[in-house]
Amino acid sequence: EVQLLESGGGLVQPGGSLRLSCAASGFTFSSYAMSWVRQAPGKGLEWVSAISGSGGSTYYADSVKGRFTISRDNSKNTLYLQMNSLRAEDTAVYYCAKVVVTRGGRYFDLWGRGTLVTVSS
Amino acid sequence: QSALTQPASVSGSPGQSITISCTGTSSDVGGYNYVSWYQQHPGKAPKLMIYEVSNRPSGVSNRFSGSKSGNTASLTISGLQAEDEADYYCSSYTSSSTLWVFGGGTKLTVL
Image (cartoon, rainbow over all chains, first blue to last red):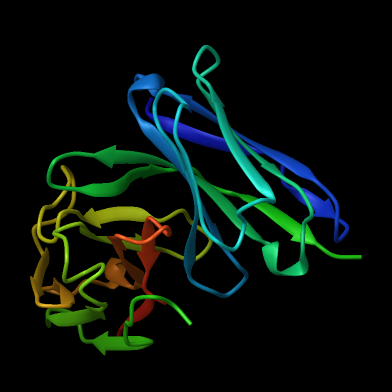
């Protein structure tokens, strides 16, 4: 079955760190760029970060640049998001998403169920 | 404030058609045919409904269609059904350092 399964969310204090994981199955993981997208409670979607299939290129939203690090282990079919210096405004459900990049498109065709990160004292 | 502008809510009766607009700029919606639409039911993950402005993934009903004119993209749902009630988000790839932007979301109510 083609699926993405996130884990690693939880409650963390402001200034703390957390590492999210996303286990992929059912497709050739290394052939696809991957991304993290978050959704604050009751709010819309916000793109956070993306990484190329090889892991050689990474991209970040300005809101997380310098604090978050995206990485992947293609031998384990797993995507990661290391989150440091967490702030209250980082509180959200974090979704892992498979990215399709073609000559005519850039979009997310598969999403995980998400993992909730709560930053609070 | 979201980068792309969508109406907060739309509604329609079963069988009717509705259209959700998504307005951006020449740096995103207007500059590329990279507009996609996602459906999200409460407590669920987003689901891809339209990609590359007007293409439907396999398994998505042909009642869903997309289009674009200038800096505004649109999602039309025809023959509304109760199961269509959900939040809908547009998205576009951009030329800025923020690779993707989303709309604020539109809540569709089927009356």
